[in-house]
Length: 146
Image 1 (cartoon, rainbow, N blue to C red):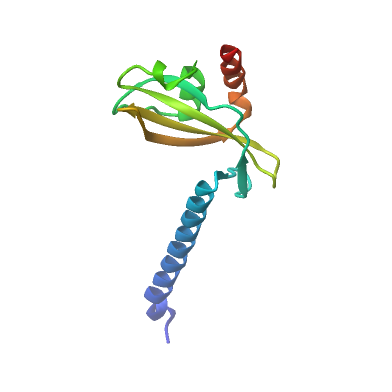
Image 2: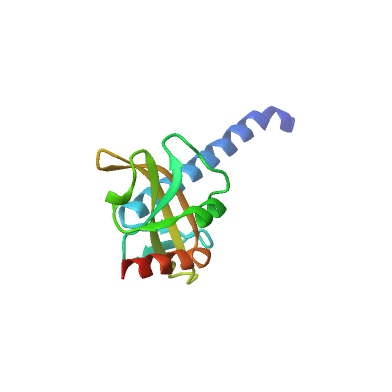
């Protein structure tokens, strides 16, 4: 018997294994989100929410527009706001949530880019980054709050 006779079976088996692994990680992510957790970008463990405030930021993006290199764009363009009433019609905003990973002790931020439509938040994009580059923005938001 030649190995090439079994090659299609081997390929299908590998594809099935990869699909099952992807589905399992997707389900794990959904379950973590229901518990108010995210997956750590460093060690893949569950990170717990540690935010004290609902950090809101306005970004200069309107309905239907996209931006490249989200981390750099958001760091340069996020402006603190205190409430959703400060969001102009058709302009997007971000909600920033701080998380801490108990496994590797890293701190993360999850940024939810949303468009407010009739008082409801319509999420446009989700991003997870290290906290350190965003720390000055959080401090700025806290200064504006007081």
